Image (cartoon, rainbow, N blue to C red; front, top):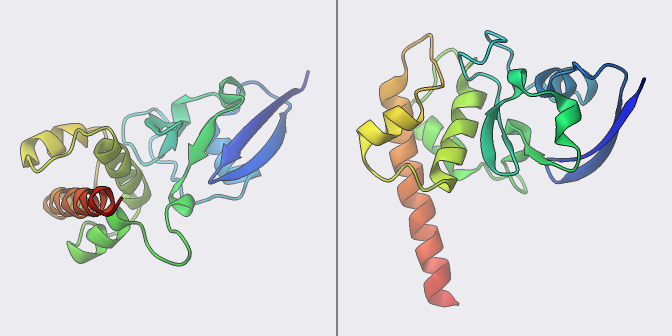
Length: 167
């Protein structure tokens, strides 16, 4: 039995037919939609390498069945940059050495984007570490990651304040 679902992935509509209802979102993204930025780490929801945004909420794509997402909007690491400009979180990760080997970086960045959007980041480093605790880094780049999230939060909040004042 086949299942057809409609998704918006990185602002593009797509219709996908699944022959197996057990296909995870991670496998759909990587194998069917050729979006290999989302990484398969543990494949058990323990490392966060597969973090993406579904309807602006952080999820582990390795634990989510694609068939359950009909009508959902999904953002992956490939969908963050706009018109050739990096997202502020991506810029901050580069500026603060929030990466080393880079394997966990897409999941870390997507989790940080979600954390900031949820209003859970602020400038409290302990709160950021707690909010990012579902994302593991084998290289222990946690200090740079925390600083990057602080910096991106400040920049994004300043940009929002500027937009409000000019409106």
